[in-house]
Length: 230
Image (tube, rainbow, N blue to C red):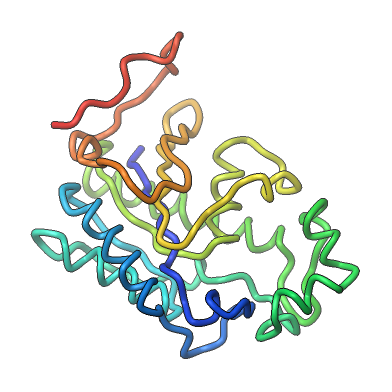
């Protein structure tokens, strides 16, 4: 299969003030977030991308544009609402410090699969739709560009954590063990036998080896020789 590069949006004005933005419109990158997104675009500049799929929310589209601007030729860049932020319902717009006093906050930390946000979405539904969308796009990019294709999905922290948990074979109740920072890059290759998680939550490092494509089949016993830059 192709290789998906999962990029969280850069830091926003809401992140900086501890507010759960959710799907609220008009939440944009702050100066630090723009710098983070530009750094992600620079890291991916030497990787010819088959596509850059973005959540429809402004912060993701801004981050995606930084990535697109560093490509030699403009990649296919659709918007997909299936990888948008979780619908936090009545929690949207409240501060994290306030939400931490809610009884359900403890459930989110220990058993997120049981959580449905009041007036919003369940975390299980969020994972189901986002994983289905990522796998659908991945299959489409491979069909169009071949198994060596690399593409980017620009999305949100909880969405990316849920996709990584699925790829790692983890129950959703363990996804809080995964960290996904602003403008971080995680990489998954959906192979013939199983997904391979090649990177999680990285914000530095050379990615030019992705230009060669990933054709993993069996996992190398002993770990293998690693990736070499072209």
